[in-house]
Image (cartoon, rainbow, N blue to C red; front, side, top):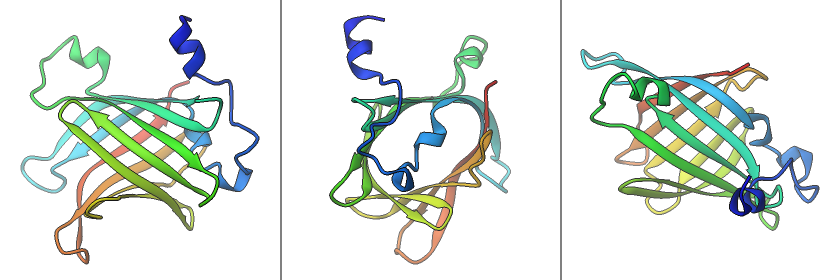
Length: 167
């Protein structure tokens, strides 16, 4: 590893994060995903992608790289709307939440995560018109949904990912 990678990547969770707040630790690893958008329409599409999570910043944060379509698929076909982005989730010990930033070319989003039962709900901070929801998390699978609203009452599904841990 070079100096940047050595300084960034951590071997595990920092002991300052209580285990009951370790919501994102189980995601650390490499996942194959099936991205689905346009659900239930004639434009429904399924795309294979990958999602890689790692502990960073002395174990006080979990960062990911979201790649859709996957690097392998990109070698086969050109896609008009690709995502190659990163999310960093930094533990906030005062509030016992996670402060989050997502960035991809042309887009930057700030969110805050809270636990709602067995789900992890990330809410966009500025307009609160978008939520990302991690649910059905097991050792080897999880479901992720991107939800949006115009009126704050009625939420609709923009896209979802079904993930399986790469073994």
